[in-house]
Amino acid sequence: MVKLYGVVHGLQLSDVLGLESRQVLVAPSLDFLYDLSQMKTGARIGVEWFEPSLNNRIEAHLEDLICKTNINAPAHYAEENKEYWEEIVYVCRQAGHSIVFLEENEEVWQRCNQAIIEYQTCRERLHALDTEECPRNQFKLTMQLKEDVHKAQLRVRKVHELERDELLLNAISSIKVDAAIVGLAHSEHWYARKDVIKSIRGIEFESYATDIVDGARSHLSMGMPKVTSRFTKEAVPNEQYTFERESVERAIRIVESQSVTGRKPNFVGTWDLTNPSKGLFEVFVEKNQDGRFRGTIEDYLGTATFDGEKTATELTFKKCYNLHRSSKDAVKEPILYKGRISNGECEGVFNVYGLSEPFYMTETSKADPTHLSLSWFDMQQDNRTGQHRLF
Image (cartoon, rainbow, N blue to C red; front, side):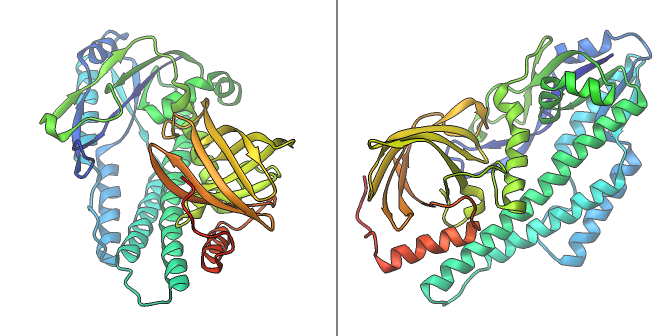
């Protein structure tokens, strides 16, 4: 039986306008530390952190990669995270507990370091873009560089969030800890699937508690050098946090197989024309007759329903994400789409929070995201549907 704790061990604070951000120290709450201290003396506490010598080797490896590639990136991981775990370790040892460092696989962190370098390299290429190409080539080059950045970022997330997740569970299973303290992204997913994990790995989570910072954002203007968490002894996983795992898996599936769901949709499109893999969506039509047009849309953010009207030349519909089947980043209010149709292709705009952005979709079951964006660009250049304001 394992007591599971989900924590926020690092926080990015932004100013009110979102123009400036920095890492700040998150402090464990006193209630959380007290709860740990009350466990039976000698308890084995697993923490999502490194034994000091391993941490030093991993940071040295990152620093070496940065020196070899000469990129602009910090040569160490956030000091704020280190301070958080050091406080947890200190309190547990003072209470007579045994600390088990769950981060024990050096090779996965070396691959994570390499993926970070590749991501930063792609970002620098994008920022350095300065070309006198013709409009189509300029658009294509910018799009390809943004796609490279997006794919590189997903390679980091695949190693850091998915592969490490498996290794952390392996460590908990093999070492037989009494309690495990891990980041919220891991704990929410694990506890929501506790029966599956018990069946497959033999790990039984007897309880779930969280120690997290209230609110999704804090502001630099508040002048806080440190924020303190709030402890919930009997926590329930948040559906939108548990969906984050599927969101990452969907995003990776899109760049690896050009599909959101693995099923055959009626239409494929993108709502991000300069980063089409990120905005790739699949439309599954449930009704398309008598002018009614409705069904479901799947993208990396989650599942949405849509309902509207469609003729041979135009369509209008509202899209609403299912709050139980979508990421916390999905728009919470209806999104209005309006477009013009020609030869099985549709281009138009969607409106959210008072802003309009372009989208494109075509009547097919699968499409290369970059081809979708170029098709949209060519429709604009050919002026086949015009560029009149749709809102």
